[in-house]
Image (tube, rainbow, N blue to C red; front, side):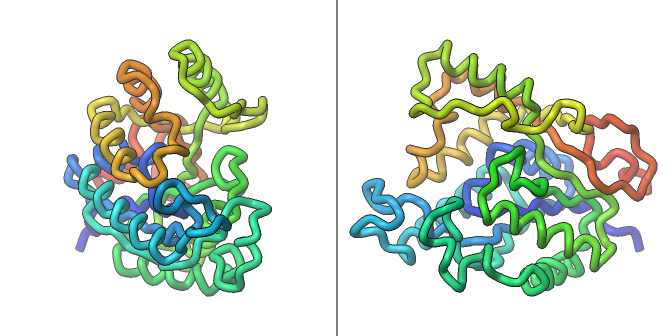
Length: 275
């Protein structure tokens, strides 16, 4: 029996699903491809009520996780994702935070333990296409949970042998430069953030660019669903025109391909639709 065409996207936190993969999740769902979002942590180290930061008085990890998972479900509804799977690990916080040392933090879980949980989901859904971050956590981001997500996804892909194609999310450096110039020109407050020259994915490593322009509005609504983290999502402060330009394509680096597909793709399911 032919396997149902299935996309599995593996992310670290609630809200990570939107920017780099929200478009493909919406697009492929609309095309009748089964979509599965795996979120590894519950987001405990996000902002709490009234913007209270982790480590500050009044920050309630459990309450933050509950709210962020509710926001995640709303985001999933906007994107039309078929299945949401939660691995349920504790958010490790940004690199260097005290939360890194928590024994239950996702980054401290043995890779083989977490990979086994993900492998079980791969066995269940049998995705042909899997998407996650590169070894730096996504273009040099370096968040411990993103790096761990990369590790367990690669391990599960290798141990099961199920996926035909494995992709890393990519933000081409040329696109980053263009986006930040556009935001500065639009008067967006970047909070002092300035990307380094090596932030993002070298353009020559990008193998796949998917047009998701018809789904920009749904991506924005999904981002807006993560209201508790809105202070950190400066892309929401861009003009509609700038959002349309910045969010209309999603880029990827292909790392595994067992089928006949072109070196440069516009469809992650290239080589799979007629098999």
